[in-house]
Image 1 (cartoon, one colour):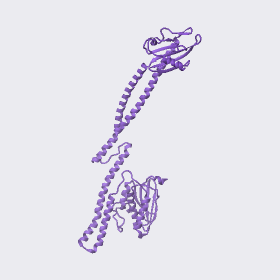
Image 2: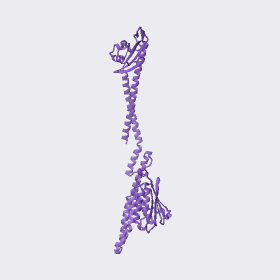
Image 3: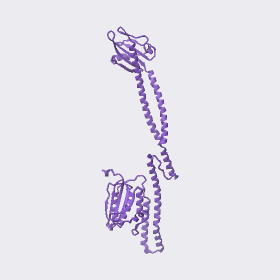
Length: 449
């Protein structure tokens, strides 16, 4: 993660500073060219001011205002031509230099020089500025002033700026990268601390992750703690399942042992009953031991489908009771629960309702952030003082019907693992109302539409 962040920040920083350097270089180059243009324009103004009329021609002093026009190889040159393009004056620096004037005649031929306006251009390694003026001499003569400057000094300034800019940007990159490394190390410190705590949990020197994390990692830490709780709960569930299995098998084994000791053949029916009881107990406890508790997220399940399947099977099993079942669960209603766990919970509750009702059962649901499933029957109901006891493992409200007293406890444990709850109230039908609350899930797109 640190390497990816450093690579990303380096690329972004390099791109940003590269664009910044490019913009600065273009701006400085443009300003240098604009400065050269302004210098040449000022030189033309100085020549205009120094020119003196000599009949139909112009005369210039031997020593112009700009000393470089007198120095050979100074890189600054000037000429004055008449309307036909004949040079009537040129600076001493130009006479002693090997500088071409072909571009000037081409400019005249193309008519690019308009009287009263400045024309600036770059040719080869030179900057050139032209200015045509109509001089009020005899016959209003037209003269063109031209000044030339070598680009070498200006390019040297640009190259110097580029070198300093590159060095400055390199120093900025180094400083920012150092700061970025420190910032990333400081920003990822909670992640490193979390990784160390996970390792400590794996080694057994720590039991939980804790809660002292920034908001971005608090949810992850809570989910890891839920996973830890899940593992602890799973081990405890396996242990209790094995304890329940051993406890449930004690009595059938004792009966079988006594029957075999007595060797009475008339007890074969009793032996079959005890063997069936043992087989049912083993299957039930092992299925409970394999029940999966959700860690972070669970699937979305429609209670209506599960309830319909269970009611159909139970009506076949309790055919002799002629039980009437009213189902009022919306088909589009969803709960956040694994389908097998929902089948386990509703199966236990509906089987109890079929077992203890007289002839009528009503199943309904209320949707919201929490889905409230209610199962009513018209049986004898559950006394208030026994309702909490029935949710404990091994507790039973009667001793007539067969069972081991762990069905409601299993439902309560599973509902609690999903953040739900199980409670018992009095039913409007006269019997018991069992309320199963589970977290709701958003409607599926097909159902919502």
